[in-house]
Length: 102
Image 1 (cartoon, rainbow, N blue to C red):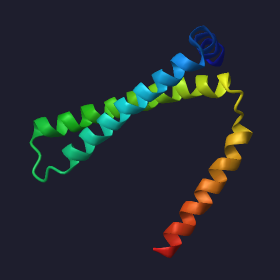
Image 2 (cartoon, one colour):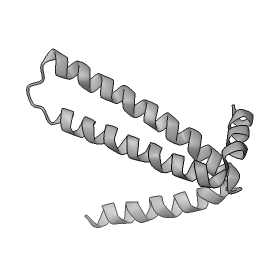
Image 3 (cartoon, helix red, strand yellow):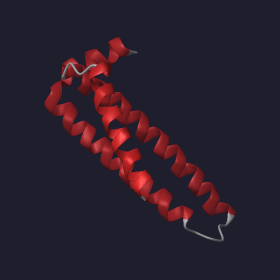
């Protein structure tokens, strides 16, 4: 799969795929907001429950889209998992410190 994603990334380039990533992130934002609104319904009907399940599937699809394009961006920018691991660890530690202060 990674070889296929590299072909796609090289074909479209960083500018196009950056725009694509922004679009995919917006679509995930919309799906998450729909889920948030649907989960606030206290007395759901069967139809509303089915709608919520559909929204969860939309969220999964949007996450997959983001991961696909994000892989391409990382590839095009020569961004390794090791590079990101350093940043992730810093971010996680900072958030845990914030939680401890709450």
